[in-house]
Length: 187
Image (cartoon, rainbow, N blue to C red; front, side):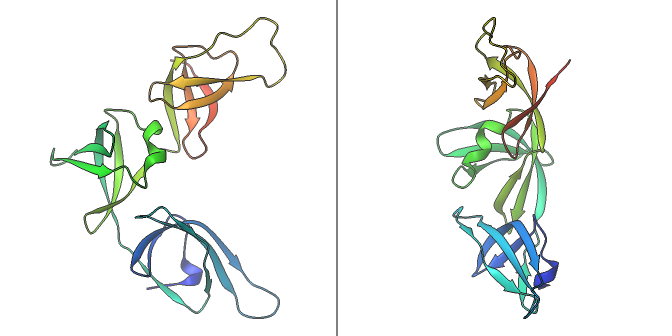
């Protein structure tokens, strides 16, 4: 059990017998009354988001999770297919609840799979990842408005708004939390 004041972002907790990921946390100490923690929780099974308030004297049950490095093989209509890098055993994770990860994962790369009681709770993707631009419109001469952008398609199908000087074949660094362009990568 964990006291409300010790809840951290990224922690997994059990609420109403369902595993939840803490995505935001705010500790509030009002002038009058008791302190409390306002959290944003994502139900790992259903994807639903809740914003409960937990009083500082209350406790919640923390889930002990394990991370297994696994190689991403491919995705089909309903699941992601991985291979455990230790045992070489192949397994699949249902796409439901993890749809937003699809365009950020590259086949052959290794990602940490967060597991609880052999149930996959999450796929950890690095905060910044390099992608190759597979389709980009050419910049138009004279189109030099400050901050001009265009949308490109990366090797995984990810669409990113980038500066107009980016062209097909370029490698770009993308923030995987926001899906935003960071910089061009020189190789």
